[in-house]
Length: 191
Image 1 (tube, one colour):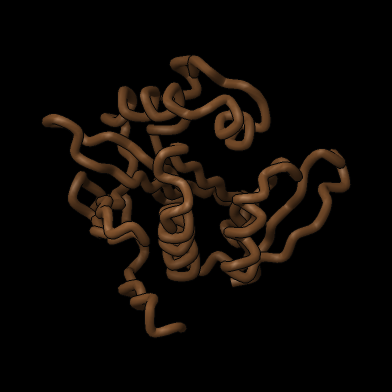
Image 2 (cartoon, helix red, strand yellow):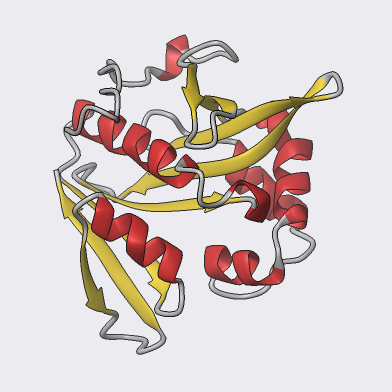
């Protein structure tokens, strides 16, 4: 690992019975020296998740959901915030805004029934892109997935999403065309 990049602290698996607003929690310094706190998404974060999605540019929203979701339904917000931490993980990068936390990036994975493979997604607000935040979030997902014994991590992305292509290449993911949809690609990593 290059000297300019500090090694991330290895962590134990995120245990659902130990999960609260303070566990796990990392403070990260980004390329522009701004700081974010990375923490688990909880069911109490519905308003923050909704605000985050609604603040995404149309392009970022399309890249995240592979379609337009300007005003997410209650069902979608519940799906994105009521996390089964036994099988799945969702982290938010937050900054203080007035007296509340504001989401500026979110990364998550969902395991398959075997618990050996997971699909992940990462999204960063446009104003926070190109600062290394996506890299920080995905590295935390990779660390937790490895600690939990997951062997294979993948994402399905728009072929037009060059920022994701760059992030995936930087982190060592393979890229191939989606055999079911030529407008999409699959980024994958064996852990």
